[in-house]
Length: 172
Image (cartoon, rainbow, N blue to C red; front, side, top):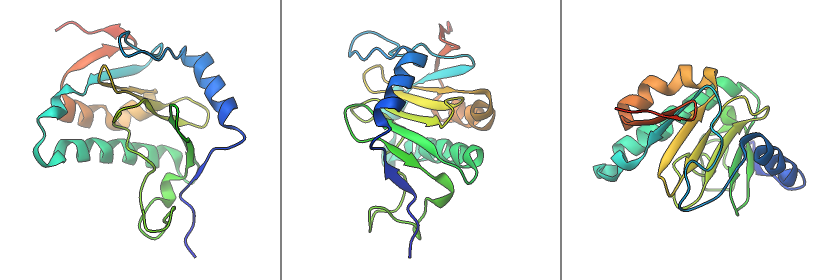
């Protein structure tokens, strides 16, 4: 029998969102950026460079890099996957794969870190590292020293333009 690689947050979803709102001062808006107080350390990249990505090779690489970082840091533990205005999940990265499918017939992670039309957030259970994808800026904030150590070089190669470091605009 296959193990469940993720499950929907139910009773504790409001607690998780309330904590996220309090720690990151989440301000959803289609016109004001950033939508969170970006923590230190953090790096926020523009996602505009992915618009010209034939075959989605760079997007696929972005997703792979982020998921690999989460898998390395979570070990056998879980992380949180928040999707604003939609179901959120607890994910066990070490269990994600074709042999552990949930729902049946759909292996893999429950939604990409790339913000496709909504805010997509991945967080450590203790909130010390994660990603915040903003669909209207469009941007991806990666925070936490451990996660940045694992993914920053690759993400810079994939995305190029850094918009902010530690919440401060980067001038070129």
